Image 1 (cartoon, helix red, strand yellow):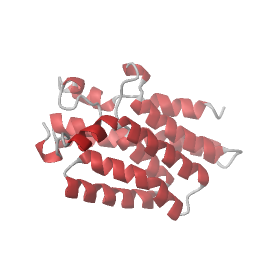
Image 2 (spheres, rainbow, N blue to C red):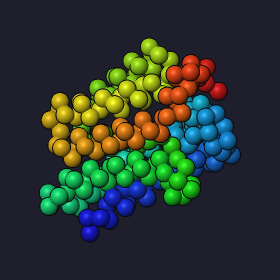
Image 3 (tube, one colour):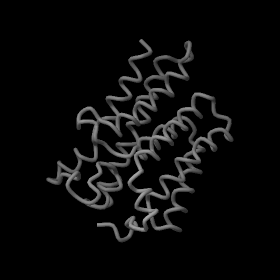
Image 4 (cartoon, rainbow, N blue to C red):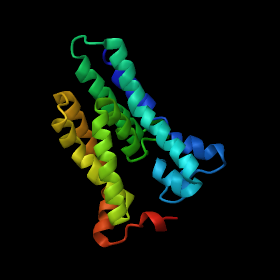
Length: 198
């Protein structure tokens, strides 16, 4: 039965809320802005309210499957590991959604939901790092990369379990991989600043 929860995590994580919200107002976000289905592009294309709604929904995709797995499994067997894997699968679902031919977002908001479940104090620090990095650099991608890279460290410092730290490390690596184009643009000086984004 334990394998069911990572599957649920993936299928829930794969729900493209950014696309659904965009379509509800007649816009396909895959054809606008950065063409990403995540909250950042929804915010750029459709405004702050729908961007915030997408962020909220994408966060829940990471949080709720883990909550369900934890509530059902309790402290049985390898429940902590299964819950952590469920969170990782939710992020993978967002990045590689079966519903969209495995072409999804970059996993930051869904990862945020996972980290929120694993360690709320970590979220506070990650958000501070994110906001400071965006303010100083002007790039959302820089904030996302730094916050995700440091998340495993904060989890470790806050005394999280090894499955939680391992899950955070895997998610951080995945986020960096999905940001490879942003990293290349940053190195070339071609990344679009947040305030000047279309």
